[in-house]
Image 1 (cartoon, helix red, strand yellow):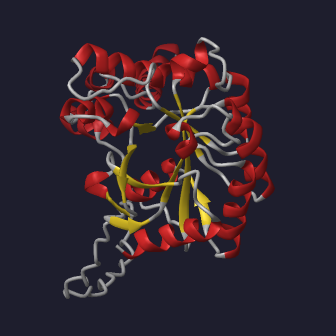
Image 2: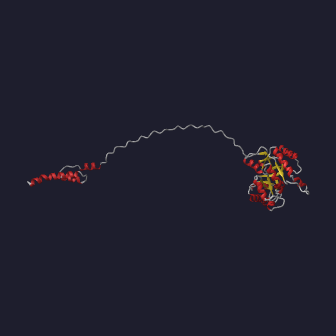
Image 3: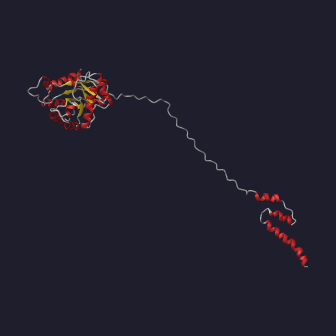
Length: 320
């Protein structure tokens, strides 16, 4: 009886063992099935175990349509050419008055000193006339700035220049200029100023006048006749004076005055190479031109002139 139960139970146990193995996918499942006497397609089981899961395809996103902008057509017409204006002033009618001493000449004055001396009373009468006639005094540097850079000039420009740097220029001319709100250009012999020669202005006076808007220009170091002088002499007199004035009063020196109006081609070349922009001569006239900016014309104001003479010669040279 016991043996019969065992014979019946063995297949059942084997079947249960087969089921337990079938729940765990492994290579041993085929062996267990064969052990139980059942048929088994091992390749089909392996293929089923290793097959990739089915994944639902992701819908392809359709790109949004882009708007194509039609470019605005540009004009193919060439631009209208603009006129190119030469800012440089090629020529101008500007009287440049030449003064020296501004004082009553001493009793022993020779003919030259008398001719070069304008009394303070006459000078003030001349300034009063210029004011009444609507003239606007400017500096030599203002004229060069107009010619070289295109800066505008007043309606009736006129330039007052003083040669040599005499002490009476500060004592008498400077107060009268301030009274009428006029400016001037003072050409000084720099070496005479530096050595404190009697009868000449000093650096403090020149600096004060510069602060008031007046221009301090160069009349060389020692007032020599430059014509025919060597390069060394001309360099020393021209460049040396410029450096000395600039170092003493701190303002740029761009204007020059030839002693006795004597110069040559070397002088002109030296002026250009050392930074001067304009120079005045004793050539009579009022027509100032760009190509002669280093040879500007002037009108000598003589000690014998009355106000009527003064007015006459300005009008005369303006008409030439």
